[in-house]
Length: 118
Image (cartoon, rainbow, N blue to C red; front, side, top):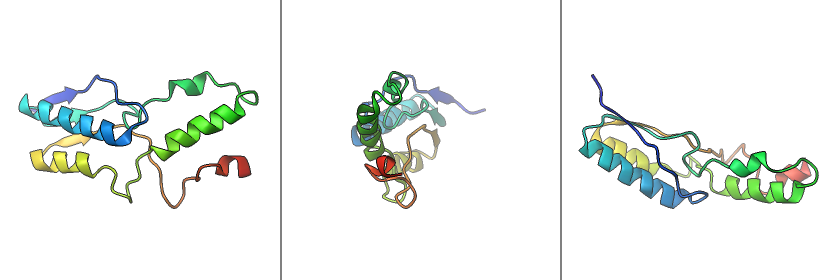
């Protein structure tokens, strides 16, 4: 049998590094309580963009592009090693971590402003 920790706390919205530090702290605390599997919410890194449902197509295009660019800048890039603090914590404790995130592929994801140029 495996002891599971389900994390139900808010990330530090749009702050990848501080959210990763929070996640590592929460993993350490969960492991101290005996967890072998730690599960974080959907889009924990860098936060769930609830504002996306409030923007109007057309009328809010400039604001929408700015918000999405901000989110894209804070998305996780695996090639850059953004998850290293969290993967190191999992390895150190010998546990499994499941963490929802916004991910950016440095080669394939659009750069800031590219949405307007398509």
